[in-house]
Length: 78
Image 1 (cartoon, rainbow, N blue to C red):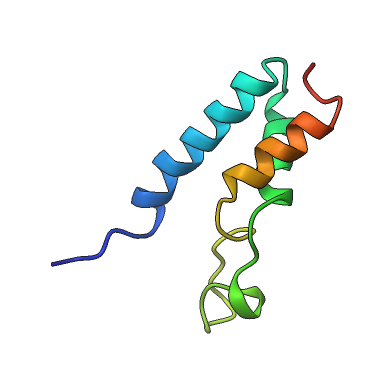
Image 2 (cartoon, rainbow, N blue to C red):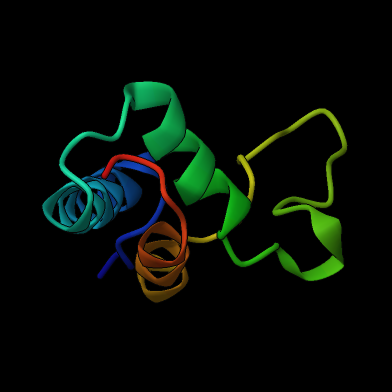
């Protein structure tokens, strides 16, 4: 049995997080949405997701709660 991971698992979660943000702040631009999601991501342990320095996995793991709190605390997308 394979454990779901990678982009196949991340994409629906991030889409759901983006939907939460847009429900709270419907006028967010794509750049503002991306900024909120990346700025509030929980960093990977050790600063990277893979011991191989040539591999990159983005800003960290989705933290939808932190993203929504940041959106509500800002004037973005009001």
